[in-house]
Length: 457
Image 1 (cartoon, rainbow, N blue to C red):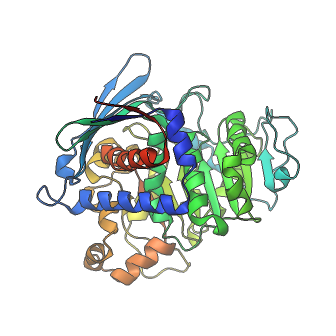
Image 2 (image 1 turned 135 degrees about the vertical axis):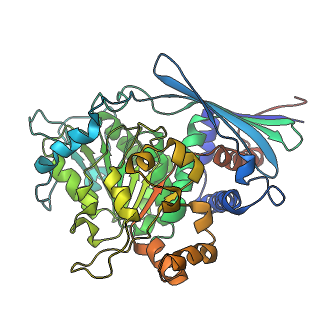
Image 3 (image 1 turned 30 degrees about the vertical axis):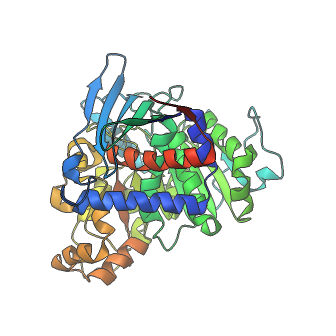
């Protein structure tokens, strides 16, 4: 059997060639695999959870961790081996106290003009016409106290790549190898593909806040624009490193592969908010409060923003879709545990404020994996009964029975929550996602002439 080899450069080229219809097809296939993972049995599907072994993690003294992620579908078997640089565990006092101690300094009233134009020149600066919809919050020497987002003690250095290095090996159901794929672009893409499953169901997506500026952030932004581009007005990139965020912004504004997405919506604008900007606390609060969608894409061990920005009376006036995919070990977290605790708290029938609807659960990719590996879930003290797998939610009628049993409105209430309520999605990643998406990419690569083929392997 021929072996298809897809290096990272070919995978990137293939992914950038995909149009909206391609993305929807890939997402539908991934949704079906996740649905079968949550509801299937060994007799009905190879995607069932029983056929997905727990991944193995091997740490190294250099701060890196290698993950071994075996998985299967009904048509393929495979394993992804990926090495990542992992943030060190925080001190016993933890980073939550650092964040809480600065909440008062970051809670000032947001203004209508929260960003200023950067005066320095990036290596490749967008043209003046392209910059018309671009605002930058520059670095500052101000001593203003700001939340401890991404300090050197809680995240990976901005000079280190957070993308996994490794490969995905695919075999037929009888064990014959048929493809070898590089892991970096694939991992970022399949994660964003999963995170945007519920995003596509949202009624309002005008304003998006993205924490991070690496590959994960890139693919979350690109898929959001491919899937809902005409409806998106603002994309705010929030990152510790201003230079890295500006590099991503420059790529979006100068790379021809983004041209059709930029031209599809003349209302679309971007901004960068850097953690070392003097008024960062005020701008951060404004960006989070105004966001309809928040994508968290960083390997952080500290909350990326104070919980009160979304849990206070004012913060709860609008519904948001919040996706957290960057943390994957118990000591890591992007969201303050109070955000998850509020998401699962019983809804009070009698209150004096108008709040967005809650679902009473946190949505996860895998219940077992998140209970073992997700720092947000563990530090919030959530139980399995307070989690629901996204694959189960995709079958609305079954999920609505659970909602009715909890005293809710059933299918109508469930749909209303998914479309406009406060929805929190936590993902630590599944090997099944790699196999499912990898299968589809190999098929597309063979059809469209990407990669190399080794005959008679």
